[in-house]
Length: 406
Image (cartoon, rainbow, N blue to C red; front, side, top):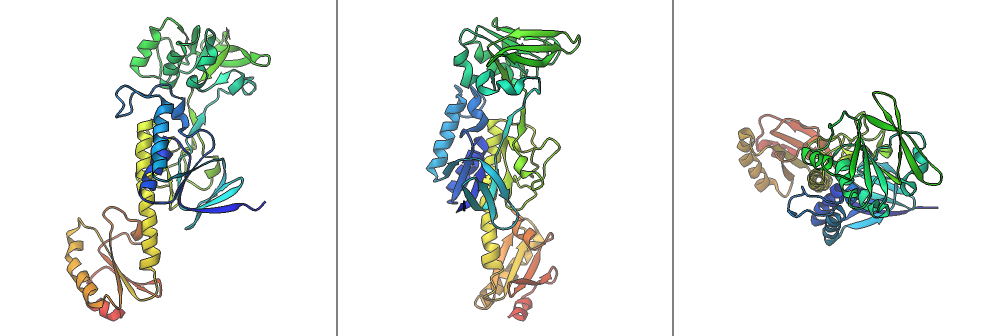
């Protein structure tokens, strides 16, 4: 079956908080933008019952509610959504290709916002009970199904403890398996104190999961005490895993640079090692993974993608255009020496505008065009003939240069 081909300015892979924010910035910049999301628009934020630390919502907001607002704003700027899975990518070169089962999406820039997936325990029997058979990763999604029942939470980070407290509104009992010694948790102090004071929560310290058991559905979780090796069977109706996430970067291996854990490495502009490809949110190597930081990533990547596309058009259509010779003045607005040559460049423009295409490129905010031209030091004047770099002049920039180019 021949795949259809669709062309966009920007393709964003992933529709979580970071991807949606990038979409808002790209759409507002009038870039033809596509967001591809394989499951639920809003990503992992939709699994959070209450978000109280996102600015602008002093009363808090549900994760689903906040992400619905994000998506509504993204659609306002004309961004297209496709609910499908990305099967592969071709990211080298000017045209990037994002492959799905039925279509290939071509783009000038790609923003990777694929986030992560819940980490599993690796215990015996785990695969048998995933999702609708007793093991869950979303208290918001499955709490109502556990009214009056006993459940087990694995983990002691913010998500585990906060979602565990949410489950106490529905469940009869919430057991919590914690890796650490008694009283020690990985969550914030406020959540820790609230959880320890909650009469419906019972903590089982120094334990990990040994085995999941049951017939067609989960019935029992066997924990192992790390200090005594004692096996502790816990009869439960459901088990919720909150032990972290793994980045969704499998399709980018060997293409994009990543750390040992598989998180993508970017600079402060969200640029990856491949030109025109950016990474944002939980998929990239970063200190804090929150909705607020994902929004920051998305804003930067959206702006960076817009800048990259604009610079590409200038580079090809203006700088390397071979209809007449060109001069490219690379300068930095905060450098006094660069500013000294501006009157000379302006005189060239006035006298030779019909014979030479003269382009001024300020690298203060972006070095994209300078990088494409292989220039690291400014001021610098580049002579372009027949669409190629003919000469690079770093000293004695004068009007006579323009005369010699004609």
